[in-house]
Length: 310
Image (cartoon, rainbow, N blue to C red):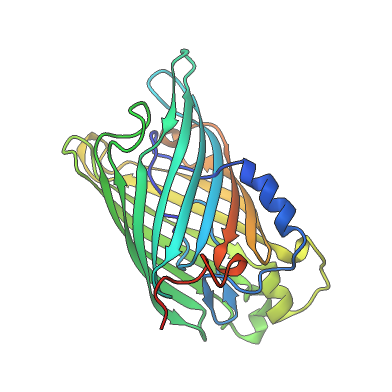
């Protein structure tokens, strides 16, 4: 349940652990494209995106690594984030999540900070699926627990963030627009309410635009593309954060994230650039890397199945 979290400087935090990329690549490169995944509506598979939560629920684990320079009082600071999130199905439509990150910040004036960020827990419910129109809608809430991380990185206060998430594929377009059917959009809106009166509330919002090559080959026209091209999903994410209180009220920061996802049967890998949308968001392009494992496909009879089954 990848729910974007506003980071210092207004940019969404990345979440990944780099060593998992190598181990996961060795496992997944031997298998064909995803046969089953957690976010399915008709013929549409919505992949697990990096900066904006997809509308699905599932048994999965996500590792991310991010690097970007963020603006600060002493100049632009280098920020590296290695993070994880584990999602566990309680029922087939309800999932619990827990995640955290290890953050390293290096400022140009020589100042630095590093340590674990606060723990984030969440619940997410898949409320509606329309297979014919490739549409999904879910709702959830997550809480970032103040004081659970290192004092140098984590806030002392907590943040509660309810959210709504959707996905829409365009497989229902007419034949004249057949080559647009692989297109899909997803989006999320999540207000952030802090428990500290001096810390302003904010609103996370954004969307993704994606074009699925697997969908093109299986549901529109088989172009005969082989691996790795047959498994690619080019994508652009638009994660944004708008301050809704205090001195920063009305200020929006965020990035435009063009990239690509590579899907396999057991998981996916991704890479995106992070291009700041304005000066308040920064002046330097960052990078996100992802390794995401589908535990419901890898361990369908043990840790990959819901805790409560019909």
